[in-house]
Image (tube, rainbow, N blue to C red; front, top):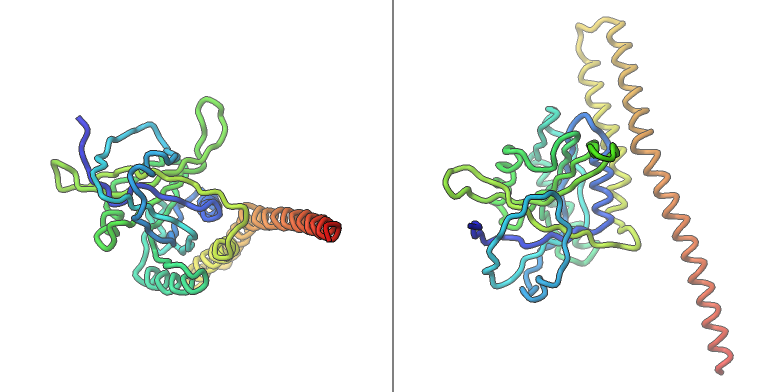
Length: 295
């Protein structure tokens, strides 16, 4: 028998340019988890009839039946993301500090003024390199803590650097979830939220800023780690030279894995936009000629 649960959020609409920023961030390193915050708005004016016609993308094979006895469907719209620096250096832990949440709140006010829309922090995302897309028990508890402050808060996970056993090719999985109280214990369990990628022809200014900021954040993390080690007084000269070489190697790896592909992507987008501009100008000239002929 299916467990009946009234969801705080019925679906998530993630804009394609924000999705690309999340994916680029998740693929920036396979050694540790990375994270960020989702910026957007929550709407609750969609009827259940409209909901039944919508198509969503699911990840995984597990299906859970959820009661739909709600007056309105709350949909989280994610327009952009804020990339965060890691505050916990353990490879399998991601935590958001109060300072980062405060800075994100300030950023949402700026974005609201820039876009003219009621932006706020609506969720968080993090990566699972080399492991399953499903949230761990720590992820579920962390999500429950965020939902105590905002019931509509959602969590996204990007599982990357995994290989399909049949085709031997790499793949990326993603899912969206919330936490609910377990029926027969004091623990929390996950509930999957349908997520739909909303296509965009152009990349928004806010997402473009986040994409360009990623190499800077990764470089700053490497610099901070190197300075902490280099400041130790008991290190000998050979160790310092070795640490400097590792620092240089890591920066070169970031340029190859992140900065280079990002630059190529931006150049490709620029070429596409220039071609589109030429087509529009040609269409404008043809329309003006037709208008002159009519006169």
